[in-house]
Amino acid sequence: MNGDLSGQILQIAIIAIPIIIAITFHEAAHGYVARLFGDETATRLGRVTFNPLKHIDLFGTIILPAFLLLTHAGFLFGYAKPVPVNFNHLRNPKRDMIWVAAAGPATNIMLALVSVALLALALHAGVAPKSWIVAALFGSVQINLVLAILNLLPLPPLDGGRVMTGLLPRPLAIRYARLERYGMLIILAALFLLPYIGEKLGMNLDIFDYLVMRPAAWAMHALFALIGLV
Image 1 (cartoon, rainbow, N blue to C red):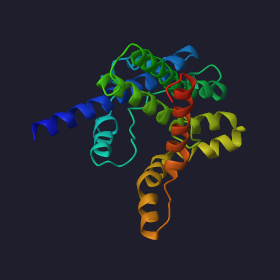
Image 2 (image 1 turned 180 degrees about the horizontal axis):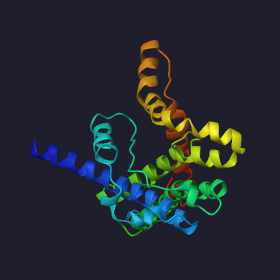
Image 3 (image 1 turned 180 degrees about the vertical axis):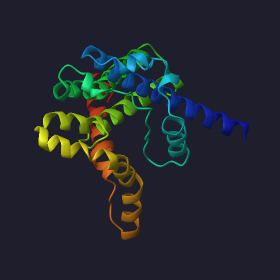
């Protein structure tokens, strides 16, 4: 029994550490780029930092991912406290919001690349493939790719939605930005409600799998192939 508990704790730690790092760097990147373009809001509130305690949301960063992991949901989802950005303080709000929004997913892609490189070095150095270090690096690649692809979906309040808002002509951008109030409900419905309905109807309505998990798996395979791990 103790062995099972220890194994579960280790499994959670192997996933939790990469999630916390991925989300912390993601949010800090938003605040840092916002500061570069003229908005000091996140800096004044102490959010341009790699201290995870400043970014962790109890439910979104800890409880929800742990629940999905322990219930073997087949996917991981989590979020942090959004970094506050006052787009009116940006030097060119419509253009600069694109860079501020894109900074988060770009950082996750960078972390995935770094994790792949470290994983290759660890394996070539003789670290056991079943060690916790290899498992954590493997998880880091997957988690960061999933976060990057999820956040690039063009739906407010995701980063991709804000990028889309910045790219659209102003009248359309204003209307599109209004979707943000419903964005989280749409995301949760896609994650939980649609698959449940599909299961009852004998159909595959797992949009999250098609739009996020499969592209992430493809990208992961491509990265591993690039460095000779597959």
